[in-house]
Length: 312
Image (cartoon, rainbow, N blue to C red; front, side):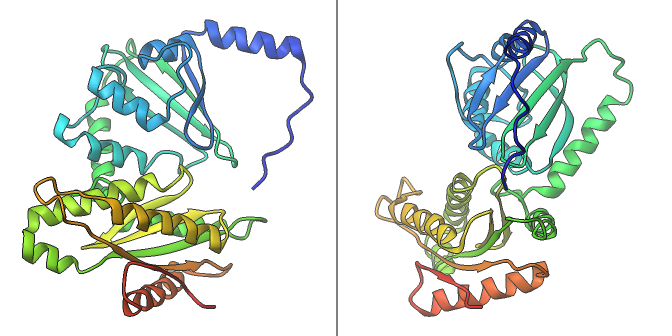
């Protein structure tokens, strides 16, 4: 989808807007479609421990802040940082507008608003609301934590079945808009029962977590992924042609071939099979997933470790 045309520029207006943002005590940041920080005012950079010239990816910024004890409060122990980040990333950039409360490590309580353009650029603005009455805040935080838990796969930290299917329904509802496309990919780890039986369930869990991390890294902010159950996952790629989607999946499969997720088993490797279907206007979640499932079966039957595109 193309962005709306920009209004005629007024140099003085743009200069004053920039000066106001620089002077504002509000935390202001702008991220591009790749979730790279392209602008941040001094208040934002101070809160998130960023050098004046730094332009990190959002996920890298959050990871560095968590390890340095800066930025947002992480409601998880250090050993579970990656799962916490995966859960947060699975909800980021999925709505045109989102507002929520957050705690900073310096003790401040902020109200963060995120505005998303159709082209993927995001405007973030946070206000310090520490001085406001906190009546009911604990209850709201418990509600938000319960909602996150209801949307998150406990083991891997990415979206669970219900949440990723909800995102699939939302993506399908937008296909009537001109230029919108959606690729739906079902992925299944090959011979996973042999991994559990031969190496134990703890090793199998680490393989699932390794796969989930790599799967999530293959997505953009407007995409989605989740664990459907067991060793089966769902990947949603927005606004890509079939061959572009296949190329993304093929890169993921190649990364898996190179992965060695078990330090105590340096020769261990694993693979994955994928079935890819392109959603059509009028598709339901069930119909498009059925086509992807047939393609996944064909990938397994053809020898595994490959991606098969569903035939129309």
